[in-house]
Length: 314
Image (cartoon, rainbow, N blue to C red; front, side, top):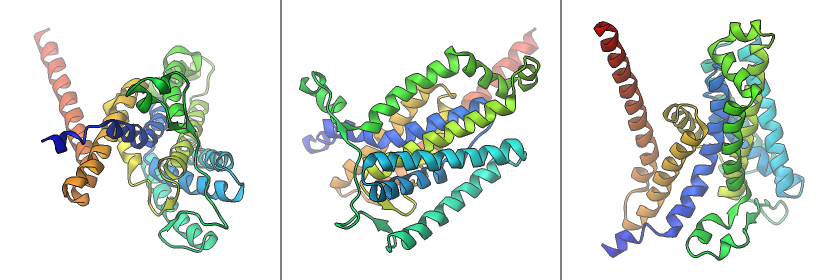
């Protein structure tokens, strides 16, 4: 029993923060497009490109800052590409999202073999080292027992993700720009009548989504790991979609949903020490995704039935 309880150590919660961070960042990007009436299911591919180009920039620009910049640049480009086809050419957002995922998978495999001359994974070497994101040690907090181990010593993008959750909430609910973005999704004609462009808001949300995907990918390859592996996004983009739906596109609620997935993922890795199959533990986050989606649908249908009953009573 004591061995089992040892799973729930501070290390489990440290891993929770690390594994949740790419999902948090991806979910923030998706909720931006969701508020303007677009669902971007291409986030998984965008994250994958961000992860590869972060490694590429780290190697050839000689530091983690170059990797982060290149990841943001490719995220910006993919976000603009997504917005161009969905907003300008009126293409189906789901088809474009699927196309992005397929394109990213093929592109990163091709570039991995072409540039680094390896298949499967690249973890750096003496000639081409990968520079990891720095770990931030917070004065005073680092000296607090337990809490210091949890909140201090994480990589840069863990703290950036927390800050972006707060900033996203302020942007969406406390600023005129956020009001216009929500209006673009809910009442586009009213927004147009007020002299603002719904299309402009959708372009902006798509670009923000791309930037968030770049950060998510950079954390995967330079923060969570210090390497690139084929398909390393591992459907985290779809888990992020589930977090957005479960959290109703509200940044703090989405953050909590992502932490839940991070906890399940981290717990799965820890229980492998008890001879639990890795195939089973890796399935856990996706099983939770299905359960959450079923619960969301059930809750929605229950609300509809209640509204119908109230209407009949009137």
